[in-house]
Amino acid sequence: MLGFLNDKLKKSDSQGTGKVIALMNQKGGVGKTTMAYNMAHALKSKGHKVLCIDMDPQFNFSLLFGEYVPDQLNVHHLLINSVRELKPMHTEAFLSEVIKKSSSGIDILCAGQELSGFELSVAGISGPRQLILKKFIESNALKERYDYIVIDGPPTLGLLVVNILCACDGVLFPFIPDAFSEQGLRNIRNVLLDIGEMGIVTPPKILGYIPNLFEARRKKSREDFNHIKDEFSDGEIFEPFMNRAHFARSMANKKSVFDYEASDYKELQGQFMNVVGSIENQLMS
View 1 (cartoon, rainbow, N blue to C red):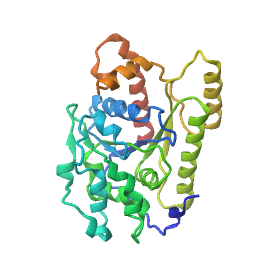
View 2 (spheres, rainbow, N blue to C red):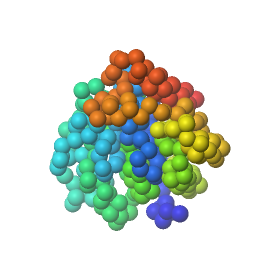
View 3 (tube, one colour):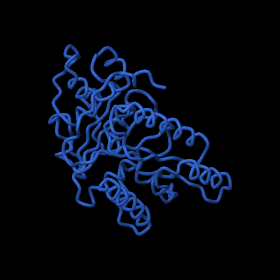
View 4 (spheres, one colour):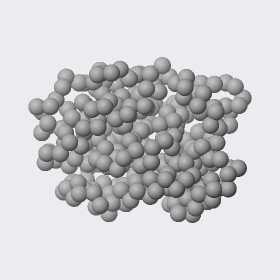
């Protein structure tokens, strides 16, 4: 399916006990970034040390944390610097300078528009292009420094997505119960299966599917949801997230649902804590 999966690769062992999780869907607009942002805060609320990596050239994850600055050095520069063959493209970007600590105590590696050119930038290297992110995480001992690394991926099927899937221990698939989102899930799961069949790395565990913006009153939504549940039975189907207004309010204010003490946010907080609890249990086994 993907030509660049045919490179000859050597397996490398992970370092550290931290876990890397990614939220992925080829379909945009499914709440992937919102889910990643709130999950990071749920993990932080449980006492975990959390790093977020924004791997989407649209950098919405970085904007939510309030850490994005135009033209700043970002994760793209660090990844390019990590490839010895690309030395002419290296910049004076150091992890200690690029990594940001948000007001919530969560560290963030911001994205930038430069990530849209990542695939072209690494096209000519002889090394395994699929493992650049994985090797970057290992060479900087990030799984030793953090309990959880949460990655927000782009709504595409390119080399960035393959890098993310090769680097993570587990993957979550947010979706809206409709035909377009279902196809997006199907497409990205096929990439995951391709990686497994090629044997380049141990593929990440499917941690589950997160239904978002579910309209239970609509018959078509219920039918689509049930169809997705039947087709994607290889992971847990979490309780649907339906509170659109509370999500919209918190995102508009660049806050997580855990920043609100009002009782009407308790249900959302509980849902995210349930997802995080499931992730902890699955990745410990």
